[in-house]
Length: 251
Image (tube, rainbow, N blue to C red; front, side):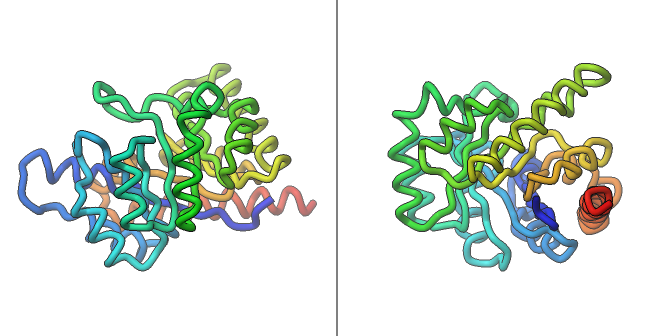
C-alpha cells in the first residue's frame, strides 16, 4: 500500500481548445506550469498520430520547460517510438489508438499484442524511460504486461465512471481486484480515464493505486473555476481519500 497518491494532470484538451481556432492560445505548457503549482505531481500529454491536440512542438517545450515528470502517452508505432527516444521523457504510457475515436476507448490487448509491443517496451526501457501499459482491469492483461517487462500498468477507469448503481459496483470490484493483483506480482498500479470530483475519491481509496492521471474533467471544470482552483480541489479530494483509507487500515 502507498501512503501517498500522485496526481498526473493531462493537458491535452488545452491544446484541443487552442487548435479549434488556431494560433498559440491557450498554451498547454502554461497550463502544465499552473497545474504543477496547484499540486500536480506530473504532466501527461498524448501525442496522437493525427496531432488533433498536442503537437510535436508542445512535447519539445514540455520536456524543456516543466520541472515535474513528463508522461508521454503514445501508440506503439515507429514514428512515436522515434519521438519518445529523441525526447526521453520520464515515462511513456503505451495506449491503443484509432483515428476514428474521440478519446481512448478501452485498454491495450497485451495478451494478443505481446509480439508487437515487446520491441517498443524494450527500446523505451533501454533509454531509461519508465514504460507503462494502459490496460483493462483484468488480471490476465496484467500478467501479460508483467511478462513484457514493464514496471507499471495504468488501469482503465472509464467503464466505472460511465456506469451507475450495480454496474458501477461491479466495475469498482474489477478495479480493486486488478489493483491488488498488480501489487501481488510487483507492478506499480496507476489508474485513469473519465475521473472527476464525483468518482475520484472511490478510486483514490484503493490502497494499491499510487498514481491517478486526470485530464478532460479538469480542463472542462477549469473553464468555470480556473485551472489552479480545479487542480487544487482535485488534489485535496485525493489526499483526503487516501488519508481516510490509511486511518481505516490503522484501526
